[in-house]
Length: 243
Image (cartoon, rainbow, N blue to C red; front, side):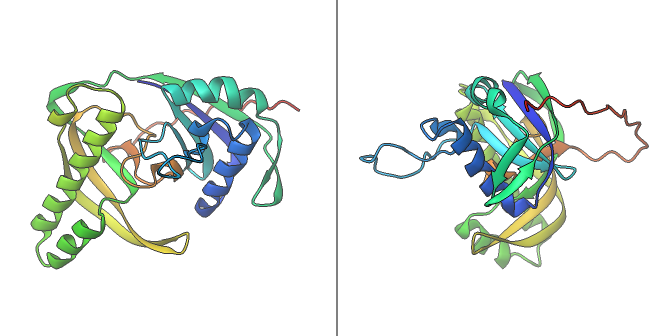
């Protein structure tokens, strides 16, 4: 799996990511459906493409990231980067982006007998049916973890199938700990999101999303929490913006 991630020198509220997505889609051209996932065919039975989004918009340490996966990475490379100027209009407001960083990553998606741990942020793990089951078990933590794990397994398999992996039905996931849960408002809808520790027999690259609304940074995969001091290397940002 090939990913290309652009980190912009830009901070936005999370609820403005949908506005950013619209601005990017307009900049590259609405004919490129991969950037906005709307179906341009007026005779199509649905207005939206339902497959796993190959271009995702998220926040990392407050900064905007745009991640393309496989065909999405190619689209970002050839369609967005040449048009990534410093002056944008987002949510009807002029926005200046002084610079950005680009990172390519290759990840081999394989199954392993040994599970790997990771963390999920702002994860929408429950549809309506599963939420009712989960809520009915509020006094039974193990039962709730089982429901979340079953939902995670389904989402991991959907991701693996979207990546074209023939063994997707063998993918398993388990939620081992819920660190926090939060109610969020998104486009006039109340959402319940989780931050959880999880593990899977599929290697999951950090920075991608799992679950619902992954195109807007929900369900972002991060590294598992390790209780030890870590050394951080500071890299100076270079301006790559076309004026």
